[in-house]
Length: 92
Image 1 (spheres, one colour):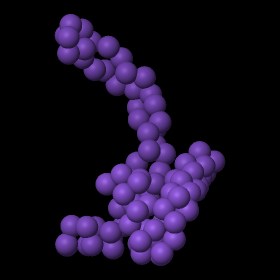
Image 2 (cartoon, one colour):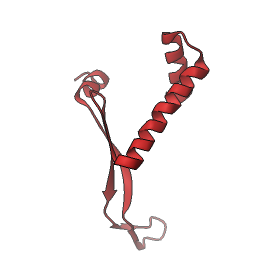
Image 3 (tube, rainbow, N blue to C red):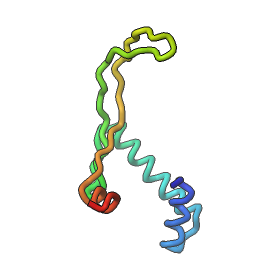
Image 4 (tube, rainbow, N blue to C red):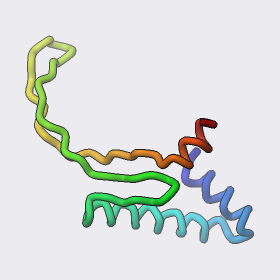
């Protein structure tokens, strides 16, 4: 599902213009990004947790040449779904 499809669905349910729904969705995504950048963690009850973690550097292999290379340490965004989301999405 794309951002436009989500906006269309929300606009239909709330009976608002699709452009307004797109702006709301973009504000939500911007808020998530800004919070992660400033605090490193965002917990949305019953939905899940977004968190920035650091992956350690590691030894890898170049698939073309077979040569060993070191992959540097880097930060990644991790999402852990909440219990209600798992139950709803996966039917558990």
